[in-house]
Amino acid sequence: MGRPGYLTWRAKLKAQAASQVTELLSSPAITPPLSQDVVERTAALIRKENLSNDEETQVLEDVACLVFLDDQFDEFEKRPEIDEEKIVGILRKTWVKMSSKGQELALQMNLSERAKTLIQKALAT
Image 1 (cartoon, rainbow, N blue to C red):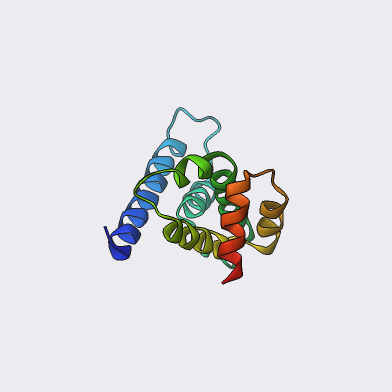
Image 2 (image 1 turned 45 degrees about the horizontal axis):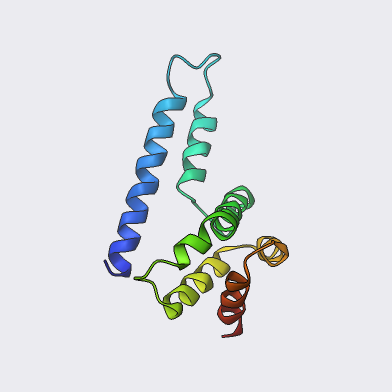
């Protein structure tokens, strides 16, 4: 899967998740019912709409990136089909999606030495 396929897949997942949450939050089982504005806002956050200009959406993206670095990166990085160059590229892309506050928090995290080394390589270029 190339980049266009990956982006299509991601967009489809976001739309599907937003649709499922909209359905759940609109359920008559939820009392009192949520306003349509709240339901739509929640769906927009899940779709990551207006990422760089919406503070709440950016915070959610920062959290997703930080969770990846903290909980998932070391196992992900060990996958045999992913070489160091690809990992560094992924880290670069992850880094630019984060706010400066998110980046600051990432640098303060207690990461593995390997993760720290790869992040430094990603930031060096």
